Image (cartoon, rainbow, N blue to C red):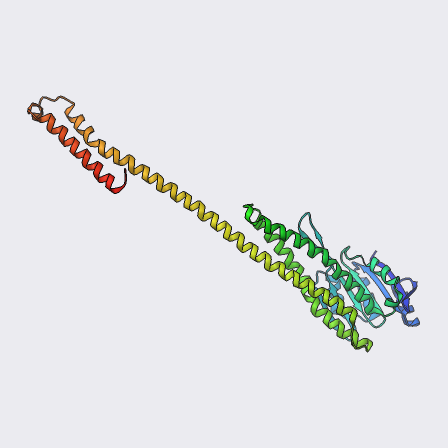
Length: 336
């Protein structure tokens, strides 16, 4: 059912409920406030509500489309507010965002949820238990919802902070999945920034709207919510900077590891080259005696030097001189 709850409040107390048209009529007749809660209404229902309350077409269009960023729009004496409540899913290390739209008028407040979160029924019960707060009118309802949404960011921030601490511990563990985890958390932090950064300006403007509509010098309730939102924004900004630094450190460590592997491969290649030089040097040294032995070991009679008195001695001397010369040359070059 799109209609979750619809009631008339007079002096902060719930007086009656009924259909949307009934509560609007009764609120105006009795000088009270109509609070109507909707869950994913269709186009015809929103168009009908827009006609009854003279809602701006652009705000109605945003509500029908959904997937809106947090923002505040002012249309005459009416305020349109979009909030993105969040909750942290530790198992998947993701932030799940909801979406709630508020239409705030002089004698009504319309809440439209596009997700299960936040639990506006719980907010309604808390306000009904404090009629002195609810008696402040539609902006008291808006404050309670804003306060609930901002409070929900606290466990989200705590969950992200815990995971970032774990990443800092894992940076030097050599785990190749650390970069993937950092990128995933960066995406969640950026989405959280999109939901929270606009709140500071929104709540500043809400204080001005409330003071203008009530004639009071200040709006302490919204100022308190504004302070909480600023703290959340500051911490989320810190998370993004920390994750950026962690990614830089991880990239540096990976580069160092790659350089170390390249150094080891280079050293191994140089060692192989030394071995090849040694083998080649010994082969060259042994080439001379092998050549002499091959030639003079054939006993060919047509080789004149075989009949010389010092033929073999000369060959052996030449072989030895060649080998010694090669040995000294290779030794000097450091190949042996």
